[in-house]
Image 1 (spheres, one colour):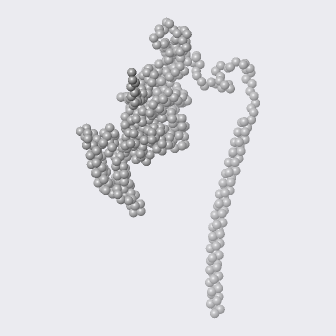
Image 2: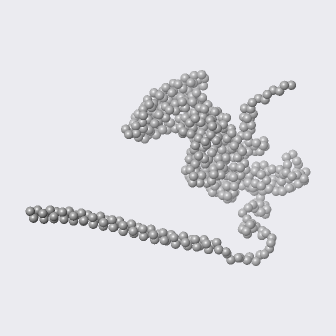
Image 3: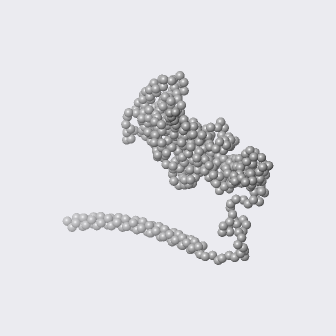
Length: 496
């Protein structure tokens, strides 16, 4: 009996020893972790102390720089303003002095009032401007003549105003390179220096763009007004940035108008700011929710839908069902395009739309099924969502068949946005909101004029602007005036 008791006691002691041994191991591990953490905290503390010392030194240096400085005596006590010096004694960065302008002049062109011979005028003053002559930058002196008692002097053709030092062709070239081609202002200055010999600084180029934006602001508003009464409009948007803020750029396109809105939000209100609460014509866009109920009739972009089917087929080439679905969907689209272009269809277009919709319902046989995320594979869910999208948007898929003037895709606006997307990818987005507005104005006028010209060249742009100056208004203002007059109610006849 004693042996059994000793055996039990020894067994319990062994268990207790094992438990204490495990406890000791746990405490050792915890101690090691605490030591490692303590070491990390000490290292971090040393880093903070070093950084604190560095900040104190910087604050001390900054404070010392703000102390009163020992006055400097230049031994020049004249009260006259020193030549070539601006405020506070700094060298002036403003306009060039007369002697500097004369030293680079290569042409002299007299400017007299229209219809007045030079012999009856006297030279009132001179204006200097850089012009592009045969592709080279030349400094031209314009002696301005007027009648002896005249208060207004003639305006130099091709120059913005009486204070401008650059011809409009230089401003247009800078705008074309920066916005249309998409190169930075630094590179614009390099290109101008290389090809024309004109040494522009970045600040000068930036100022020229500001001037052009100011001049074209009214044209921008006029183009915006011309969009609302159009029969068909194509709308798209892409990501943009203003500084570090994520924004969007919208583009509104017709056959003869293009309008950009850079650095704005993506909500429906951004489109309504241009088109009104509801656009009375036909809108062509992708299936973005903001466009829903925005147009009286809506044509969905077939390019977006076909690309989704193509992507599904390419990602899963072994699924023959997806290949067959793409072939059938594309055949349906091609048939719709053929009927759109068939000029013999005058009264039977609605029947053709019914036939196309019936074929689409047959093609999307699983559109009535519910997507089960737990049992369906991801690509099968994508296939089902595509069928749902086609059936739900059926009323907006064949509007272009009923109205042949409508394009079946939104490629018109996508082409206009492609340049903006490339600029965004290169990190050359707007730095400020005024910069985004400036881009909107200049790109809108350039892109809209591009729709009017057979060839988009500097010569055609200059001819167009010269016509605006001659008529006293742009062609867009003339179009808006004609449209307003055409839509005005007839005047009531008065009794004799």
